[in-house]
Image (cartoon, rainbow, N blue to C red):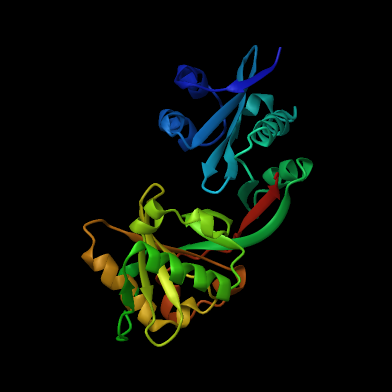
Length: 286
């Protein structure tokens, strides 16, 4: 008999017995932290032999949710378990009146995940490449003047909203690797307060830095236009920010595949090469 239910910390040992075929699978390793996170809900498809698949939904502000953490036991592949489990999670979200949009983010190279999303009638909406500056010491910092710091929650919100409108931003990089549909309501006071927001005094360009942790300390650069590598003052500002931190922050930014394919020579040795875009799938449920 097969059942699907929400998982708890009591399922940890059963989860650890899953054979996902992934060496040091982080989803299995950090299962207790995922369960403890109030924004994360995990479900399992359970058979008489054990847990065949795990997946969940990560809730973000403004009724947005990201499907993910999908893992299948390789001993039970090709039985439609992943599709059945995600169908259950989607139905669960559709019953929640606070949920508006469901998305999934997968690499272009991950064809099995895309086939599952196609079966679920979740459509691709956009794509991006996450660039990590793994060798900042190789980068020659421009001598340009840094951008001015914007302070105050209301002022920061205003310049971010204006920039998003000017750049016609469809998605907002709310967290590293987690863009969601742009809406001003996602910019809660607590979130904005933690952002370091800067403006080019010579134009309307703005840039925000959010500190995040995704296996390492990240300085996520939020910038809405495709000319990020032509903004010398922006990069002076980023490196000034890094110098003032007591963490080993790694700069990261999301760009379009077109921007990633034309990185200027001055940046190429600093950023890790990445030719595998993330695809954003999504559907509105309200």
